[in-house]
Image 1 (cartoon, rainbow, N blue to C red):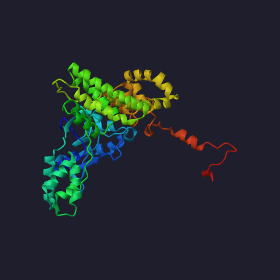
Image 2: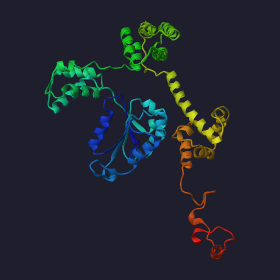
Image 3: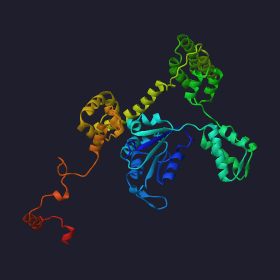
Image 4: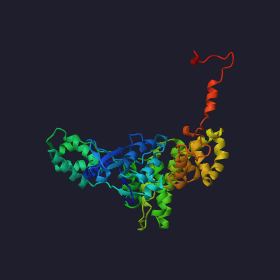
Length: 441
């Protein structure tokens, strides 16, 4: 059994992560058990489908029996594993951690944003192998398109190949779809056919925008990067503000950079007060081209672009508030009081007691109905911590044992009734005036 039983494939949509996983299964002769965002992915569903598939042998689609000891394995694929949404996917994260820890078959998790997945459990970082897929270049896409054309039996003009590859902007899936759309029913694809393709709407990431502002020395390009990004100046200014003190280490550059940024903030304030969004263009110019022209020195930072701590804290706070609300509601129902009383008066004491007392933690899971995520929030631990796992396992229903104190007697434990007592009960005459039983007639 390998040290790391699961692999995480990381990359933007359309670059071949799922195709690579399916190609691996095909090359190895493995069966495939796949779950994606269109499936129900609650904890129960993942355990019923993915975990069960990861623990036992199975049959292929052709009916062939796959025996693990003979190399007949299955590949468990969880596509879009970073897209887990609140109550719709309740319990999914603990089930994924359990899958990684207990699987006897290879597992692949496919994500666009690894941080969105790993922040919920430390096991995702420490017990998986992460492989990052980068966007293919236009040259790589062109080679692939030529191979497809050759195998499908039609000729394609080199100009058409370059047009499709450039229009895809690193999205291999989009390039193949464009090729299919213009080659359908044709034996020759010309450059004129490719010109009929509409310009694909490409979006610049915030990392690219920040990089163009601080590293490329291109004020006009940084302004275009903001226009191409799928965000508004209200959000973009947070990214610029986060990275400005790390990028401009020269004091003069820093002062000039913040002066431009403050002017952008003034325009944003006027937008909020007057509800006139035409001022967004001025704010965008100041936070991109203005900040880019504020550098007068040749000192450049070699560090990575930083994700705004403000957004990170707000995201975590939103998730924590939702979990806290669910915990207070369950405790209020269990204690026959209001959620406000639980939140203000009771929760701090329950949190301290649950952190120190194993039996109390177990009783909360069993009687109040807390799940592993809610218990982890209550005692300030991760969902895969020993305290949480132990309490959930101890509270799980199981068969009664004779040694359990207070357990009801099982049927085979009833004391034997003496024969004379049985006979006396059977022969006891009914009292006068008593209603006859059905069996007396």
